[in-house]
Image (cartoon, rainbow, N blue to C red; front, side, top):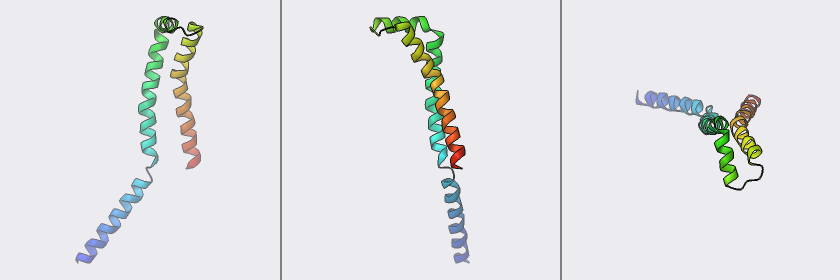
Length: 95
């Protein structure tokens, strides 16, 4: 009887590890969503307060502060969306 319990436990553990192995993409997805949220949030805040962001660029001596502030804010906000879209297409291709 104890050998059948050991066999059942071994088979159950093997099935659990196979299921966990099939979720190897989950950690990358959660990390990208977590980091992406903060990139999007800060980009959105910069877009909604572009005058202040431009003034900060001018104070730092960055050339063409209005252009560079807008470019930086929109790249931060929309660039994350493009990157996550590219990752989803990679995921679909690999499965």
